[in-house]
Image 1 (tube, rainbow, N blue to C red):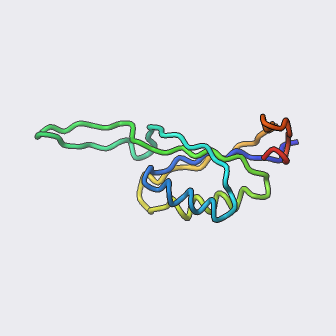
Image 2: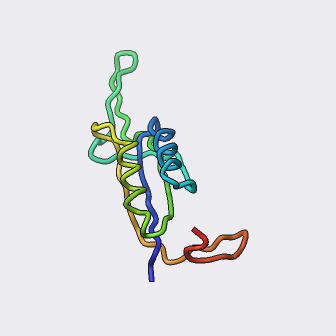
Length: 115
């Protein structure tokens, strides 16, 4: 029985502090943050340097990974959307997947108690 979800959000790097603070205010304190590079519909950008154009295909993004109990998914997703959204292409995506089990290494607790 799956009762936990992993939420993976890919956001603009400059929105990390705002998202992190909003999540903490919503009661979500645990997260893993990774600097990543990627692209979606934005397909990268074209820059000019010393009169030459060059294309940056993979843009810097920030990946936030959070595991929550099912009842917290909507709150966490809404919090991320509200705090990360600029309305421009490249704001990012949120992916939600089921988590079969969680084990806290320090105590050996598992399941909901470990989240």
